Every structure is written in structure tokens, then in C-alpha cells.
Amino acid sequence: MGSAAFIRFSSRTVGAALLLVGFSASLALNLPGHLEYDSVVQLLEGRTGAYSNWHPPIMAWMLGVGDAIVPGASLFVVFDTTLAYAALLSLFWLTPRPSWTAVAATAVALCLPQLLLFQGIVWKDILFADACLAGFVCMAHAAARWERRPVRLTLLAASALLLALAALTRQNGLLIIPCAAGAVAAVSWRCDAQTARAARAVLCAAGFAGACAIVGLIGNAALQGRVVAPRAQAEMTAKAQVYDIVGMLKARPGLPLDLLSVHAPQLAGLIRSGGPQRYSPATIDPLDDWSPLGQAVAKSEAAVGDQWLALVVHHPLDYLAVRARVFAWLALSQHPSECALYTVGVDGPAPQMAALGLKPRMNRRDEWLDDYAGRFVGIGFLHPAFALIAAASAVVMVRRKRPADLVMIGLLVATALYVASFFIISIACEYRYLYLVDLASIAAVIYVFASSRDVVPPSALRGSGVTVRSSSCNSRRSRPTATTAR
Image (cartoon, rainbow, N blue to C red; front, side):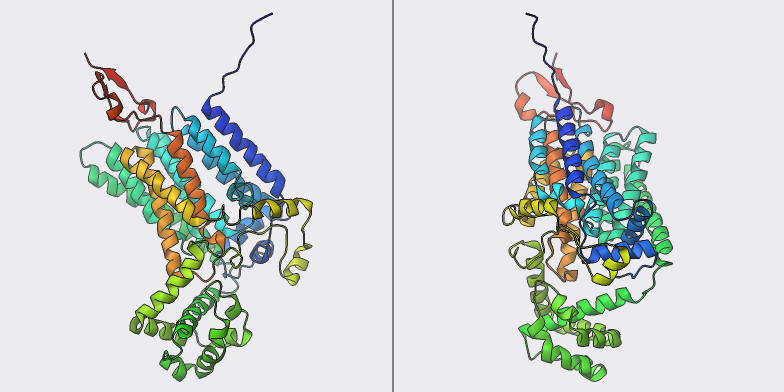
């Protein structure tokens, strides 16, 4: 008998294969996508080319582009899923010798709804998280190849485009840009020549932030030309302020509403008589669905803003207490039965569904996905658990300080800043709002495990006659080099 032939698979090959299988499974299970109220509205806006501005119009525009090629949201789902899985796949090429622990972490991550289901849901929050992750991963590859100028500039340009897309996708997405610019500065400081490196770091950061700003401003200007409800953002802000006012009034019924009583007495009366009963830290919807309140707010936006500011200035502790409670409902994942976790199938407002030619959908595949995701309620839909994973990954990277580490730390800092902004702006505890926490944590832990063999701890070689050179900024020399002392 001839000797048996064995094929040796590298960790990179197996990790890549797992991600390709996960990518295929996600598309097979989710296409043509899951849509709910917001998704249906944005798809119709994309098809008609008239944007309401209740949501950032980039989402509607992208849906419209895909819908013009293949009716529906299928191409948008393919784009979203490709962005996320490609970013995770490329992490195995950020290191010369990926470890097998990264393969194990990838296998676990692929079983979670955050990758298998969420990528098929047509939500701006998924697009934002995917674009943010892909942008920082492109930057990490640039950091690992910093001395190869053409490659570095190409990757940084791709990063700027992706991060500008992320910033256009969510109103508070702009917060990631300073973090990205800071990461570029940190890598430049680490990798560029010692001479005038501070100036070079500042110039690199300014240039990157400027590129993101230019792309974002041009994109926003082009999209705003198709907005048919320019006052939507102002109305949304006023409703969010009323939400805070009602929350403070529920906690302290005797709170004065002097400015509203003078300039908008009808609104003040509605807030006092019916607001507290409809208030919930879980969501603004009961107040938003109360049409008399909405009509009164639309007539008194300036008075609402003045009253809100007066209460924040003169009763800051009441304001902070209300915001802390709303933020806790969102961030701590303690109320899965009252906070929307995910959606499957197709459902939305009847007029928009009819205009799109859509019918409600909940087929056997959707039912299976619903049952599958439901098994993770209470154990998998936990932002605090993912935040702890991110924090542990950050500690490892801070200690190593490799160029790509600095960028991935920037991703986690951007995520933390993005989450913190919801202390002020949160109006509902929907899980999707902080989806970036989960996705960034998954990417960080895969990256940390993948690169764990790149740096040999000096303590492990102490007294062995071997010295260790620090990791290089050049990808061609990033493999740790041990030199026997002569």
C-alpha cells in the first residue's frame, strides 16, 4: 500500500474558509433581506429619489441604487454582508502567522446572530457598523505596510471613503472621524522618521480628517438636493427634547415649564396632562404616536428648545437622572422583552408596502431564523459582555503597541465615544443602535488572537542568550526576529 497523503491546512486557510462559509450561509438564509417600518420607508424613498431627511439620506440613496438594478433590497444586503465579512477575513492577513485560537474565535463568532442574522437586516445601524469596521481595518493594513508609500496611500484612501460613508449613515457617526485621525497620527508617530515626526503626525491626521470631510460634505450636499422635508431634522430634535422634558416632569411633577406656559400654552398643557402617563424609558414611541402632541410640537419648536435648555441649565441633576435611566435601558441589555432585538421577514406601513409592491413575509426560513435568534435572548444579546471583550482586547493591544494595534485601539475608542453619545441622544432601547459594540468586539478579539504569535514576550527569553527586536512598521519585517547573542 502506498503511504497515505495528508494535506496540511494553515490557520489562515481554515479561518478564511470558515468566513467564506459564514458569508455564504448568511446570504442564503437572509436574502432578499429583512425589512421593517424604517427599511420599507427608506426603500420607497430610494426608489422615488425623494428623501424625507428623517433618516440620513445616504441609506435611501444606496437602497435606490440597488433597487434600480435588482428590485428590492437584495443588492444592499449583499453589499453590507460583503463589507463585514471581507473586513473580518482580512484580519488573517494582518499578521504573518495567524494563531489557531483566532480560528476558534471566528468559528464561535459565526454562530452568533450578530453575524449570521443581522447582516441580512436592512438597517442603517448595520451599514454604519460595517463601514466603520471596514474603514478601520483598511487603516490597520496601511499601518502594517506604512513604509510602502503607494500601498499605504491607497489603503488610507479606501479607509477615508468607508469612514465618510459611516459618518453619513448616522447623525452621530461623525464622532468616529477624530478617532480615526488620531489613529493615523499615532501610527505616523510610531513609524515615520524621528526628524520632525510630531509635525508629520499632525499633518497625516489633518490630511486624513480633511479627506473624510471633503467626501462627506460633497456626498451630503448632493443628497440634500433631493430632500423634500428639510425641517425633518429640526422636528426630530424638538420631539427628542420633549421626550426629556416629559421624563423630567414624570420624576418631578412640580417642575416649572415657564417658557412653554408663555409661548406655547397648549403644548405645556398637553405635556402636563398626558405626557407622564405615556412616558417610558424604553422608547419615545408612545409620545411620538400621540398626534395632538406631535402637532403642538411642530408649531412650537423654538419654544421647546428654549424650555429644554432652561431645564438642563437650572435642573441639571434631574436631566442627568432621566438621561442615565434611558441610557441604561439601551446599553445594559436588561430588558429584552421590552426592547427590540432583531427583526425577520418583511413588514411595514401599508401605503409604502403597496407602493413598493411588497407583501408581508414570514416564511419557514424566517420562522427558523426567528427561533434560532430567540435562543440567544439573555445570553447573546448583551452589549456589556461584548464591551468587556473589547476592553480586554484593548489592554492587550495597549501593551503591545504594534502599528496595527494602534488602529484597532482607535476603532474601540471610536466605538466607546459613539456609545457615549447615546447618553444624550437615545430615545429608544433598540439593540441595533449599539450593534457597532458587538461587531467591533468580535473583530478586536479575532485580531488579538490572530496576532498573538507575532511578538515573543521578552520574559520568555530572559536568560536564554536570545534577544528580541521590536516589531517593525514594515510588513515585510513584521515577523518577530530572535537573534542568538554571540
